[in-house]
Length: 566
Image (cartoon, rainbow, N blue to C red; front, side, top):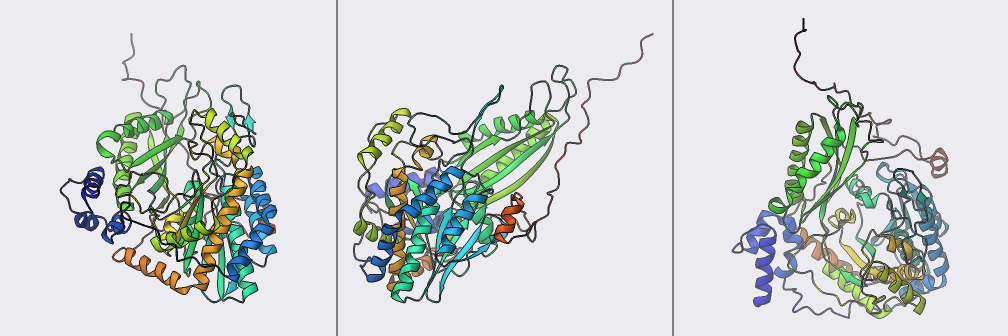
């Protein structure tokens, strides 16, 4: 607690827009959610400078060895599932084949499948066992638009290239390696089920097939609907550039789409036309002026124009711009979101268009759990890091070279467990964060792509169906299954996670960021998918077809009426 920590704390307060003289207690009182994440570990005496991770939580057992042997003996099955999902490359909320393949493997190992979780056709809950602690695993399988890439190609070479004479595009690809994520979690869950059966353990395993994570939709609506109720612990992992357990936080996020409606006309004689594109561009420009004076270092916002028109000679009468707004807590997100909305309103007025906007989804910042991270870390130390071949290292260096990054290859060691830093500077978000406020959560990151390669890049797609990703998902399956077995066979470890969860969340009442009555973004699946999964359309509570958004605006005036000339 010496000078270095105090400097860090003062800097953190400044970054959050508070005075350097403000107390940590004042910060927590102003935003208790930050107190449960950013401030909790410092208050309880765990700082990066003094922390030493314990080694004793993990224990070898016959059940654990059963789980690990199953993973080793079924590696080809798990990597095959990952490669199959990589090939499908289905984007968020439309992962029909990917979800089916994932559920089919679970069903073949005795899991009961319930489709349509929270009304999403590509979401499911798979359950094995009964009684005992209820442990949940996260399986995601959505790809990202525009990130298609050929397997193991070290230069940008899309597998799917959509030719258009005026604007070509790339197909979707697994630029966040969710194909490996889902397969690794499924492997862990099945391995635990084998240990339960072989050793006669009392426990329940659930796998949550989660749709639309890249849009922060699936779990945020599912948690609100109570899909994750009743869990004792939740185990999650994500592809990363290094391998470590963590109890750090993530950014809270709001997703919203703003649509500007005008009046179409000829681009060559535009007087009186009203451009939806003008509205979207003005909104984007106005929002940029927020960055210097209205966005703390922990804040982010970014956007994509969805439908900006089809040709220059047609003034587009409709244009949508999709925003992600991130901050350190839900309350801080709302402050920034409200400012973005004001930019949209001003842009509509300036462009003489009509504004409609929709709140798509929202998720809290993640709530870490030190006890869970320590148990996972101890198991990771026993199992060891992923083992990569010389060919893997060569591929990694080739990808790094293409992106202009140091050609250091893949890490071969585990990153030591360390407390979260006292300063949160923002970053990615996940809809697993909402789950973490319902149940104590274990988070593990595993090397799936080389350092220097960012998430959501074609280079991640390139390696996501190679031995690099295979070793990552198999390691993740081992880490999570070993940790889960300890939670079953050592009740005191689960009790420690629960007690920390209660302590962190004391005084915090979780409330979904999604307004009541909101209909989720949703797509109608193919009829044969519905038939195979035993679902009907539309799901309960979903209005279908969705009400249309249509521009009905009048053309603008072209000037004052002039009296007839004699």
